[in-house]
Length: 161
Length: 260
Image (cartoon, rainbow over all chains, first blue to last red):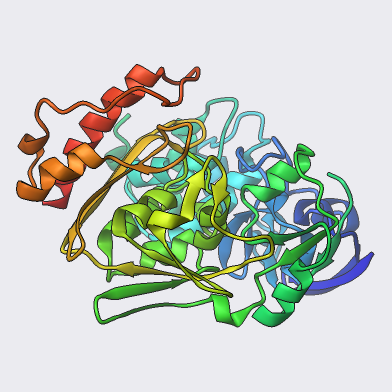
């Protein structure tokens, strides 16, 4: 076992982990931040997407020890300080950007990463960017609409499908 | 996943020493290795993370050569502007989250027969630099998941001579986003190179007949009537050897057109 320390959603945290402990396991089991979902556990579905040092990663495809000293943001860190939904989260609710909701934490984190590098993405750019996030309910249309809305664009005008 | 020790050296020398131990395995971005460990297809006693080694980082262009540190992520390579065809290739690997972790050194050390970077290295005539020596791309790729790297040898950087013209065109396997077939063409001081990934049982290879045709006339029309052999090509549920051979011809033409 080894000691690992990092900052998660602004809080300094540390814990004992094995070499093989995944970052997703550390978040969910040690820190009890179960908003980060583990879907496929093979690095394909993107439900476990979080941000590490400002960029999106799949937390099931990274060891906890690789995040030593890192700044980590999970879905629990996306709400406003008063507990109300953040802009992207609110847009997902407004546009019904979820069905069963399992992929939603990863979708929101992917959307946040996209809007950081491309504040006004087109519908096509959004769909391309979401290539690493799977929705088994196939509810992509409303997810795309939610991200268009979160970027401040006119959904009726920008959404072609 | 089987249990293993986890080491985080901060210098290349420490990493080389750690990898000298019995059962030690290097960990780069982990985007292939971690799923492999989960499937228990590998059981290293020690994983040696290369992420904390400053000598493996950084991208610079000087004197017509792009030098890419082995720990550079696909996102970082996609962001450089000195070699646009290489940036385009990096931008097409996996998905955004994978590109933020996966590295060029990890991809080249693994030498997946359907990976994109081997095509760029072979198609550019790159030099793979390790802690011990420099290896020409032509000598580096030795077969399916096999390279010229010795046990414990670490790629430190990759040097790409920037060609006058180059392009990479990939026919994507939509589930994995690996290349069903990918073709990298370049025309530079070293002549014309055509490197094909995703197609051969032996991994990335140069299509000599196409190179010869393009050497005198670098145009898609120069490839008319030329077809790649289906011998020893990969056949699986995604495509037969004959289909892949057909794709090689089509994609090489498209790559030449894209290279301009």
